[in-house]
Length: 435
Image (cartoon, rainbow, N blue to C red):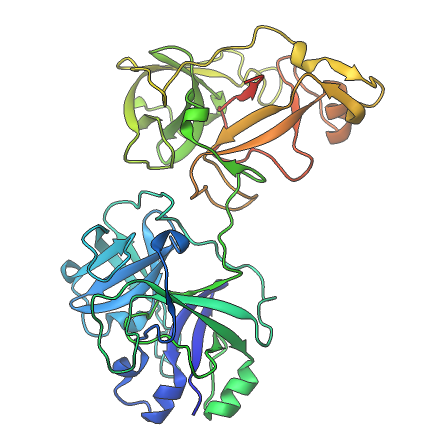
């Protein structure tokens, strides 16, 4: 019988369930041995290629998992079948090998197994969420997964990649195995059910390894990758080093994130609307020299005081949207932390060329924006770190006409050609001209 894999689809993400060919051969007995999965016929790879993948150790058992947020991981529900003691569970990130001493280890705070797991049939809703004690420090080797929000991948022979640290040969056992990947193909549910003489649940789909490639014991819960990439842009931007924007800071305010600009060793500039969620200074932190959100190499400063513009939103919504933050201690400047040079001219707003058509107008230069915010509208904060994008100036009268709005005198418009933009999490960060 051909080994065909069935996966769980929930909220549009793919999570590995089992090798139904092996399960059928064993008449649904010795379930855990049949379904804990291995990479057979795969090739070695490195964690930076699949940074959303984690190892989940549960009292001697090994499963894979997928990073959803800075505190949560998705895995398979059957990975908890033999133990539910939190103290015997660990999450490893940035692991090239099993039991990798270079990996970062996280304790498990809680977990939630799907309430309908195994209710209607064996392995129904085989999915679980793990919550860790601390937070993942995102980096090139540790990132959240980009969830699939389309069904266009459900085509015959569509290619997927599965990864894991499990067995590389049936019955071999899990040794000090390196991270491996394997290519699998989509098989229609009808064909899968017919060839394997079984009935699949509505949340399942099948992947096939052509008899030579497979996943096996130790890889359960790891998910599969479609299109071999993670999305990541500041809505059309590119990764950039913090040294290129050393005046940019991260402003944490009671769980929300804004950006800011260093004015001098004790003060920062940001947006006034960043304080709408909270004005308690004890719940605010400033991170300097941050390449990533939650960067453990960043320098953290406490807030002494804040001053919001007295006319904020008085004339119109978001008018005078500016605020100052004062720090409790001085910034020590270096290549990652520098004060901004403020613009004292409006030359960058001048048109050189056809003044009757702003699209044909050559302004002095484009401007750059940088931030750690959302990478697409309605998406999530960037897991790729600091990103930059290029924008161009649009005259106020054209902006008002295009968007049917009125702008205050202290506002101006920048345009990203519909493919680039700043987004949630980038507020207060400023833009760069001629630099």
